[in-house]
Length: 209
Image (tube, rainbow, N blue to C red; front, side, top):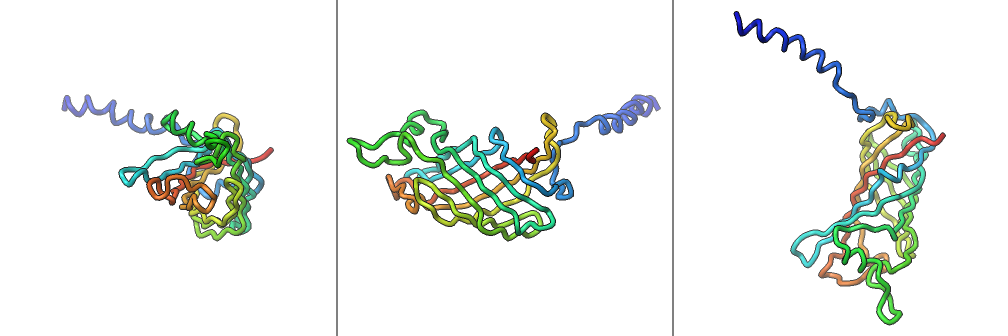
């Protein structure tokens, strides 16, 4: 009996704790998505890349501060349009030496091994969207290092709601793709550093005012 009496306060406390638990601003609820034009949240949009290094392990880095727009109508998903600009000059890795190499000028005025000291921004512009439920294949043109090639992004809806800080309606997506850097004229150290580059993209879009 004494144990039962001791347990009673806990039984009453559980519902109160559940009621006070904070709710996530974004959830995977497509009903929260409203039609309109959205701008990227550059502080929370990342384009990750991964390459095989000498066949031993993978090395990876990220591009941040991406800007652009998404035009979206949940009733007409296949008519969505995406236009994203990626500042290659802001590439980041865990190694100061590697980051410096990616942005280093070529020797004796020759071609840079990777992007060089003043790379132009990369750009992705969608040309077709094939949506199915909460996923979509987004085909578009990727311009990188002055070369434009078609790329397909495998995209998944990851959440929608109002940003708790600025109150703006926000939608989020994850996407992945694999490209060949040689297609864009970045040929240094192939095949020892893989030609294939895996892209892992996490993007948040906030509705324009």
